[in-house]
Amino acid sequence: MMKSRFVAAAVIAATLNAAAMAQTATNPNLNAQLLVAARQSDLPAVERSLARGAAPNSRNRLGKTALLMAAEKGHAGMADRLLAAGADVNLASLEGVTPLMAAAYGGHAAIAKKLLDAGARIDPVDRMKKPAVVYAAGQGHADVLALLLERGVPVDAAYEQQLTALMWAAGQGHAEAVRLLLSRGAKTGLRDDRGLTAAEIAQQAGYAPIAAAIGAAR
Image (tube, rainbow, N blue to C red; front, side, top):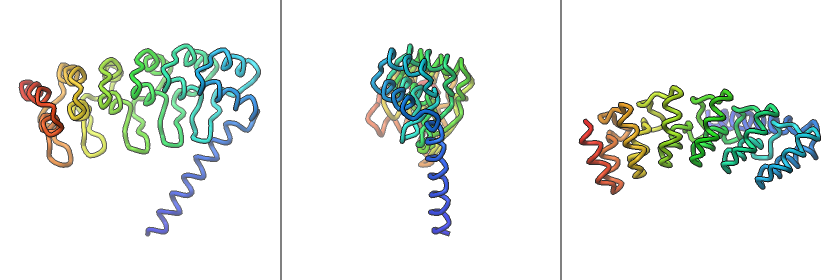
């Protein structure tokens, strides 16, 4: 059984790497220039690479596209240009990170909105089994969190270890995100896989005021 798991993992890794390489097979030099320009947040260089024929969905060795790097860095103008050139809004890195997840983690609400308007999915999870909403809640980015809730993310959805967005925000001490989630009707009595509520998680983490606020919302 253990051997079969290793074999399966190797097959998955080979498939992902092959997919990444396939994106750069058409014009490796131009595609490499595009990726370097994106990594350096050099919009003029990105535009030149695209104009010369670089593939907008080319990927580096980590499977990151230029759009993903723009989302990480919060470069809205670059994201606009790449989307206009046909960049795949849902193309993830080898770690399963999508541009929307990157924008959520970095708190780049304007980019997150652009990605969602362009068809970014709200449900994918990365290899850590975390979706965009978990990153927004865990980093305390209430504006991104509000946007994701407006686009259909269930406020009480539970993810890895049965943790909800409220639990993530509470456990990291993000009062504004907690207030937002409570205002959207987040349930305070749900428990994670340890049997802890959001208030108890906040209390254990040393965020007594947040624990009290959650308790008062019951």
